[in-house]
Length: 511
Image (cartoon, rainbow, N blue to C red; front, side, top):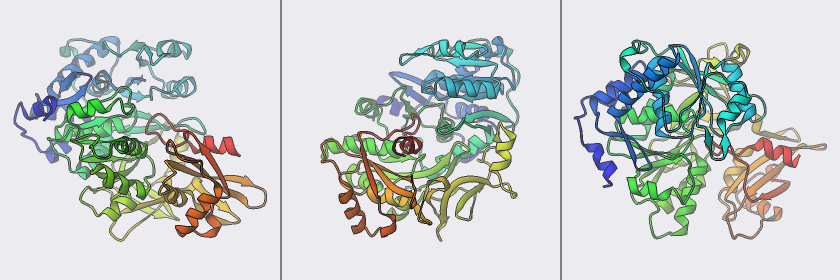
């Protein structure tokens, strides 16, 4: 067992179970309880550094005192645009200790998205990493007229915790503003409470059936809604995660192996990346200690599930979440292969799923409080208080959720509705397709035509439309759903968070 993982077994005895910890009212209360239970166990591992649960509480309090000395008070809005680092987690928990309202911004965002977030949130302070990956964030912040700019990369504010006011006593006030991707319009400011984030993280933790012996990994931006989701899981079960400031394969594999990572993933694109590495050396397990890939954020073709299990020798559990509801459903590692391959898992206790005219609607503690814009909030919730997700789906007899597409991702050809996801799932099984996106393009005669855009594995012959159509016919796809156009790209356009395919860019390019 790697040194960092074995050290997780040392220190104070575990005197609180995950169930006991789940009753925490605030994120800071959860930190304090875990630190009291297992102060010497590691929680975050990065580039040779190690932060324990006790260290997280103690250092976050000192950072909170430093922020308090700068003028940050309970309710103060603090935006931060920082990479996935131990310091970022410390700053975030320091703000949680103060009861400030924090607005995380994905570090890859630039002037348009960042300026919008700063204006709409009315942020009084803005934490940046300085120059990061060739981009001067401090200069951008000045250009945008941000207030209270300070760097929080290596050095963090510091002070004496004796000056601090009491921590927040309740977790139902809005203390988080997350931002939707804003791919076709301005982003939406999503309002969360400590309790909604705790509910989402608890769902993830309990569904995956993890233990204190596991070692996780954060290969995604900590500023994403998955950041607190994942950290709540670490706090509940008392195990560490390896943080990656910049994730790329195969470069990151050494860290996975060094720390003995048992649980990895992030989204469908991450599964594909690990699988591609495994295929380079089929006889040698790419991460010897790995037993589970898990994630969400984008549809998962059933064939990808089967390929991961067959070729990597690990289990794969996929879930369903969104910025508005960080965890809705999650696959159970003990479920049947059929359910794990074809569904998004089941909702946890307390999450109500309702299907209205094919649309998935949600109500429960993990659901956000709405948006910064009251008009957007009014439009997003129905008369019974259920959030309209815009996703299409159905619930099976066993209670599993099956997603069938997006309301805006249905292609209407000659009056017939066609699910893009159905065609994409079939294309994923073609040996010469690494990934596929199916879109509808304007057509004067048919309304829309079906266009398949594919990314191929290296070294494969370029596909033709005839080959694709023949394959889909053999798979039993109805004739009226067959693609009428094929485009082959070196790489599908993706966002920088969970690597979702940006279909709007494809529509812009090929319309």
